[in-house]
Image 1 (cartoon, helix red, strand yellow):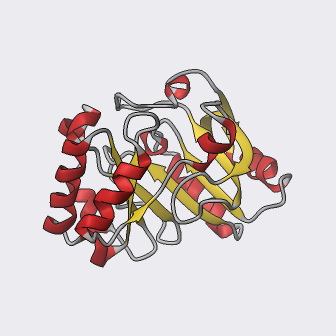
Image 2 (cartoon, helix red, strand yellow):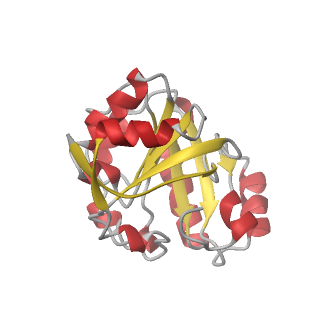
Length: 212
């Protein structure tokens, strides 16, 4: 069973409630979405085929129990489901970063799904699969990447409409260099939202460097 892998690397988790944890990232090639703020467009193509056993061997060399499967859009490769199960079976603590355009219902329940909800300013709202919200569990997380005040106001409505904070952790993240983080923090505090604001730690530490 082979997957097209763009890169496997070891770094600090820069997002989600696992921020700061030493983590192995497995980045799969390909994505059906084209978000305006995408910072991994280099993974839309390229990469090389790897067997699941070889991926596991590579991960084991880094000596951490935390693994994040990401992309691109990892679920665009159906073999990703096999990889996720194999990682869980091997005892890793696994998270999956997905853009929300592909069905998550078959993802192994042991995986923490980090599910984006695409905002209007992402230009990918039209392709969003809202049914995915039905499969959220307490160990999952929902992430809004916000481009503007209009995105924030929209996200606030979706948060309430779908009772998201009652289902799992909710993350509000400003697009790097587009929203002043202090402004977003003030909006969240003023509205008393039950969300976690996050910044991309890896960009604070290393800037916009691929593979970090």
